[in-house]
Image 1 (cartoon, rainbow, N blue to C red):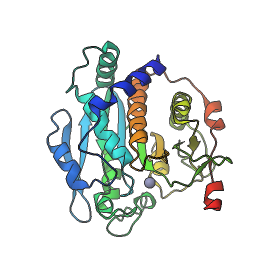
Image 2: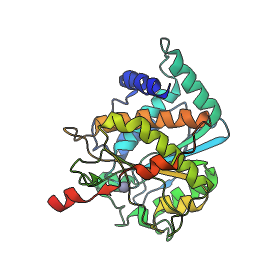
Image 3: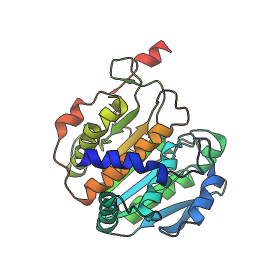
Image 4: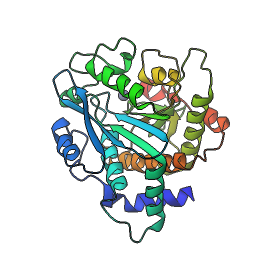
Length: 308
Ligand SMILES: [Zn+2]
């Protein structure tokens, strides 16, 4: 059933794609009008960047399973921000799906079972400059403990206040990571970040591992078997690790490279299908235990970096 759901999502995607976001160079000023016209989600300015750009949380209050997603903590990593607006268009029900009863059921089930909060473009000053870091030159993903940046504080406070069951940490990764020791470029990379240096597995981390295993089995064939696992070296200053330590099932998703697609429109569509599939699975609480698949995912390899 999940394979047919993904095929359906793929086929209806053009109806939900946020057409005002056409490439990966959009800025804060391009997403603010989309946020301001949004009637479906409750929209709260949760703070401001160093250069006083408003950062918003967009929340659907539904059922007891709580999902927090944020994008673009690195300013030059826009793929998931655009995908968030595509997903929100789908969830908003603005377009009826008369001929797709399955998709209507999926949407209604997601909205009744889950509470979902999006924080798109956490680092708008970096987006403005096209840089990884914020306006202070700080990599927010090394600021989860020091909290020197207002953007880091916004994310930390959102986790404490929203108290998510699952957290999706959305990034774009370097183009030169390979699929293990092959010369194939990674299209997507997943990780259930460790919460200690021993890479221990508690119940929340196991749930993240189970969901990644399921998503890997579903989506790896759709991206030419180019899904990898991100390095699981423990980095206590990173948000994934910090939030995993707060007993939240945390999932890192990195969009990499797809051939002849500089604006990542294909991977953006894959993000759309993947997030809605993940929501549906979590709404049905039906993720089977599976550590083996997770263990079998090849790591990001360095072979292309060495050749570059
Ligand atoms: Zn990143």
